[in-house]
Structures are given as C-alpha cells and as structure tokens.
Image (cartoon, rainbow, N blue to C red):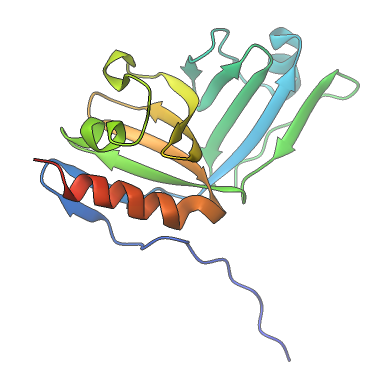
Length: 170
C-alpha cells in the first residue's frame, strides 16, 4: 500500500536568530484571493468586513488593489459564499507560506532587498512588492513585526536571502 503524501515546509521549522531580528516560518494559514468590482457585494457574499483603501488591512483581509483583496485566516477556516454575485473567490492556501520577521532590526533585513521605503509603512499596511526578484505580500503587523507571504516554490530562496541579509546587519 502506498503512503499518503504529507506536505512539508520548504524552509526550516526552527527560527533563525540574529542580533535584533528573528526570522521564522509562520503558522499555516487559509488564504483566499478575492476579486470584485463592488466591495459591499464582496463583504455581503463572504460575511466579512472589507477594507476599502489599497494597503489597508482589516480582520485578516488586505486590500491589494482597487478590486483585489487577500484574506488570511487560521488554517482550517472557511468562508461562506453568496450565490449569483459577480465576484471571484479562489482558495490559494497551499500556494504560499508566511515568513515572520520580528525585532528592532527586522526592517533593516527587509530593506536589504525590498525597493520600498519601509519606514513609511504604518502598522497594518499591506502591499504586494518584491524582495530581490521574488514577489511577496508584505504586511507590517507592529512596529517590529513583519509578515511576508511568498509562493511556496520561492520560499527556500527567500529564506536564504533574508537570513543572509540579517547575518550582515551591523
């Protein structure tokens, strides 16, 4: 009899610790990519408040564009869907993993490969951007804590790039 396939994390389970910053694999999440022309219809369809400004986050949902949201909830969560509404809801839970950077130097490690001025990101801000050449969704969770969603296939590269950047902080 064949063994069941088991998903493993593409990066180490143990946090990497550096002076002023730790880099760790985040908890598994349920994720949905949501597209709708009418945010009110989307909110009604999924039973969840929808942030209305690009970059804003609200209850696990980030507004990434004028008609695009990313909803991140604890693993195993589900959302109800209203029928007949003009929207797209795609489960992307297995596509990405989350890396969490925490500490006073987390911003410095991220700034080593991200072209954005991260010092201007308010707490709660989310955006799609890049780190070196890898597309990420970056969320500032607190003054010193950042969440980075990256496609699973790019996670080992991003882990190496971030830990290398953190190891060179002076």
